[in-house]
Image (cartoon, rainbow, N blue to C red; front, side, top):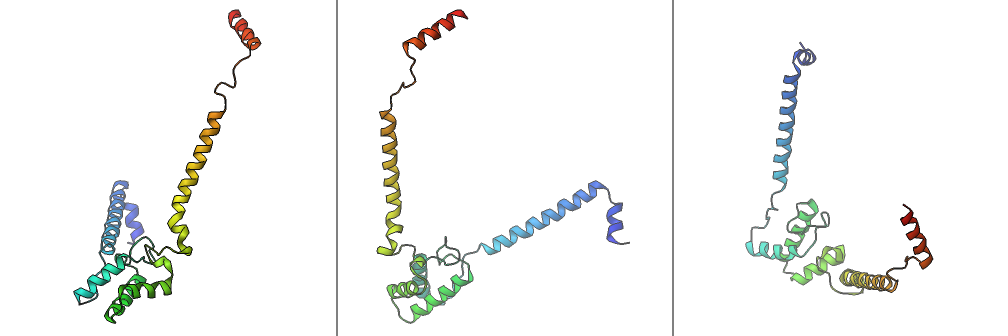
Length: 171
């Protein structure tokens, strides 16, 4: 007998239980896979001083793949490569500023969570305040224009009021 004959001979209730078991097994496998992926990045350096310095520097750097994670917490392959690069620069005796300068020269200001204030980054630093000020300006203008319009601009003229009273009295 093949599997098709076995499935045809089973009742709907049994098939439903099998389907639920398969879906449950799939969900368990998926969640167990996600928990394995959610682990913290493992340190690769055997020297705790180098590792501590790497973590300090990597907290200020953005992962170029994830973009919303720091280099210290990212699990992307590129982040591993960048951490190895930073470790080698630390072991070579480079200062923190020299390491940041090296990474900025290679990847641009985007790699920094707090880029320096310079003409290229003015929009990043001052843009939100400018948008806030423009929004407040337009809100003030709108409220001022709304206040200037008469509150009862659709009032009835005396002739219209008399005619309306006459119609209401008839009914």
